[in-house]
Amino acid sequence: MLVLAALALVVGIVLSRNTTRSAAERAALPPRADCVRFPGACADGVPTAPPAELAALHTEVAAADSAWRTTLARESRSGVFPDKGLTAMRDALVATESAVRDARALLQEAEQQQNADARALALDALREAYESKRALLTRATRLLEEAI
Amino acid sequence: MPRMKATRFDAPFAKIFARPFARRFARPFARPFAVLFAMRFAVLFALLFVVVPNTAHAQKPVTAGASVPRGTVIHLRLQSGSVKLSGWPFDSVHVSGMLAPGESWAMRADGDTMRLRADGIPRGLAAPSELEIFVPMSSPLIVRAAAASLVVRDFDVSVDVATAAGNLLVEAVRGPVRAETMQGTLTVLGPIPRVDASTASGALLVSVPYDTINDVVYEQRTTSERATPFSVVLLRSVSGRITFDSPAVDSAIIHNVRGDVRVITSPTASGRVHVTSHVGRVIVGWTDKMRANVDALTQKGGVRGSVPVNGAPPAGAAAQTTGNVAQSAGDAAPSSAGVDVSTLMRRTPLGVAVSYTFGRSNDTRPGPFTVRAVRGELVFERVDVRPAP
Image (cartoon, one colour):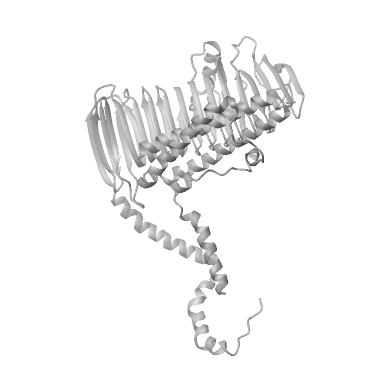
């Protein structure tokens, strides 16, 4: 009985860690992929490096992500930004990151098939996904900076 | 369930303590779940009546005003609550309403900007602020809010409004509008010349009031193209549903990552509509008064609904129809006489492509309307337009 009680206590503590974590901490975590809606996001062997055409855009997204994390670290101390907004941001980041990985998988598939038209479509999808992520990060950073 | 047999050790205990205890304390818990639920609900309800009046009394009234020179930029910063923000023809600012406990109101002129600000963070269960603010309708407006819901109306110049978590309604603005909310519903009612609107998870609706969608608007657009309710529209969301409903538009670029997109519009001759979606469905609505030149493609999704064809809606691949709809009957066919329709639906190595054009031969042909979905489904639906009163 004692062993079971101890086990339940440990499980309870582990499970409650996520619920006690603040919205700001959750938003700062690296986003996991949504493998159900974006099947390509969890495909094996997909390169993370962007194609040459989108290298500049990828760099801009990385810079926007860095600015967002810096601002978020400051915000977590102020507590002005509503948790609902941070949770929405967190979910949106998961979706945009999943879209990026999914489009990257489609691009790889098109390149393996040597289909130029499919590659062009996948490249457009990847560009849109990058731009969505950049727009989201830029908007959220600006809102956060102006709210602090 | 088998009844547990008392052992010789616990029998005296049961006799002395457990049975009376059970009779006295455990019996109430044996009541039906519905009764227990009702009891708890009653307690919560009573608590609500105790808490709400106390917090409402804790709000602070605020009334403030100041004159501002014409053309001064109004910069408003808010924390939470609901705020109604209207333009008026006077060169002054007026604020009235209730502030949440913990908030204070400040106004100060800063060069050519008038800064209005609700400072402080509202306390946990406190009643939120409820403010009504009037500013000159000719003053550019910038609003930044943390968790406020806003209604913004009656402005002649640019409006730039953003809130992290809250609903936004923007209407009757004659200047360009930029509006965004992370978590909340964003509604923009036209006509508005330029709209740049975005949400993260909230629904996004950009439309014109239905009483303005009538034959006059359609006919003016096809003849002189003066009556476009929206000139340039940029809509973006991540997981909220986007709805864009306007008889005509000069240029619309709409993108959604995970949410659905519903578009009922037609570009002008020199304009274009471009809709992209990754996972969400793209619903293209059409009316028999609309002139269309649609080119849609989904790479991994399917197609359903009814596109304007002669006779029955297309099913499956390689359905091609060209002809004059007025000469044939069909649910999907436009009802106006003399409407030319050309529809092509095919499965390509890139996905399922649907393209259709229709309109009267003497009409000005609309610009391109392209739809690109990665995994999202394409849905075509006929929309009935309310006739002009």
